[in-house]
Length: 78
Image (cartoon, rainbow, N blue to C red; front, side, top):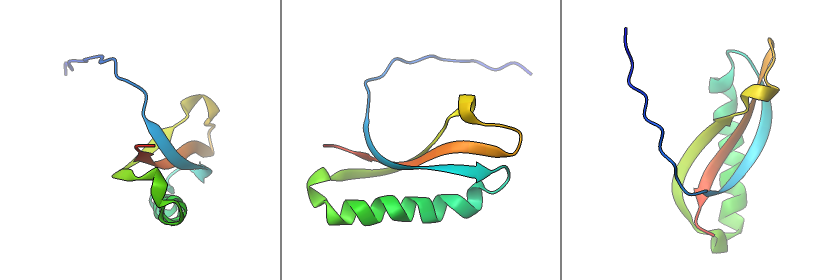
């Protein structure tokens, strides 16, 4: 099977995020509570305004056989 890859340079985005070490196979159990923490913070700081895009950033260099290193976050405009 052949895949086409496209590399695109973009500008940095501002984020509000929490970091978590997640056992492999358990991302589905962690992302909801983690994003809830971010949104709880953002509701207390409306001046950060958000465009509402959630994301997960996997830090592959910090992962091991048992766990993943993930930032769960939300893009903010300020």
